[in-house]
Image (cartoon, rainbow, N blue to C red):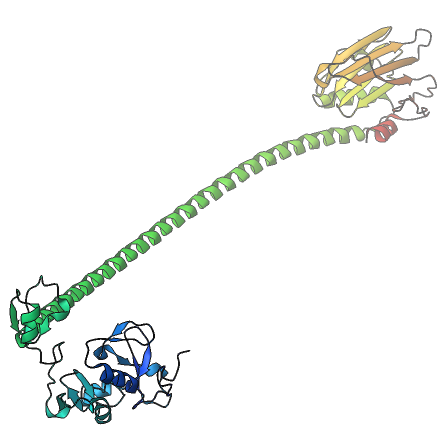
Length: 435
């Protein structure tokens, strides 16, 4: 934190005789100590700083308001310019006098303090004239000439009095300071006008750029919205086409499945009708059933002589429901007949006086019959389903016999372990075993 007292006299700073002044090197001393040093050393262009030994000039020093007491009134620059256009260089008060030798402005109090030891300095009341003459750097005469040589390297000595001009600008051309002031002012105005025009042009360019940017933005936005709408319409159209194709596909397959189901229903219905007609047969003997069966099948077996001969009584019947095949015959007569219920026709007659084998390829069924020569009333029926295998393997054996036949009844054991029951009628066998 900067000190609030002078480094030389250690007095606290104030806004009057101990007003803080900051030098070019940045150190601060009160004005009283600086004036005493100047009086002791004499009038010099520069003086040595008491802290860092750097050189500083009196006219370069400014008041250090940052370390003045808080109740010290700060200078109001706008008010000073409006009222007197000048402020005191030592305190916040308005300046009332101008020293031509020092080139600085003072209030009445500061002028008494600072210039009491300089009786030869020329001071004027600022109120006496609106124009305060600017002094040359020599602090002896006012500025009267201006160096017009653009290549001159002495920039800080461009405006001087006539004596200094002859000393520092012997080889340069000069013009009066007032003329130079007007010329420079006009040049500055031209430059300012040019800059203002550039600013205006930049504003026009900027406005045009903004308008182009807004226009391009609107065009891009409209283009995006148009493409989005087209894409949406295309997606909706493809969706409708896909849904129509899907509905058509579903309807087509539904129709195919429906037709297939209808065909199966009709086939099942036909089978049911056949079975119902078979079930409705109430005859007690096979002689009366076979003509009705053949009439139903609309065909006749290869050998139906036993049907025509009322003395021939069929004594065996077997139906394979999984293949709709009915096997029947008279073991004593040595004839076995095969009936296909689906095709409604007989497909073979087998003589079983000895041994006989028959294949029915469409259903992959194999039938093997063997008759015991010593027992005329016994015949074994072997059957199996086969595919790429020896049909004799794993055959199911059913023994059909009328050994205990009484009053024209016969036996049809569906299970080889099942003991046949006597006194069964054809109607009972069909009802109990086929349905």
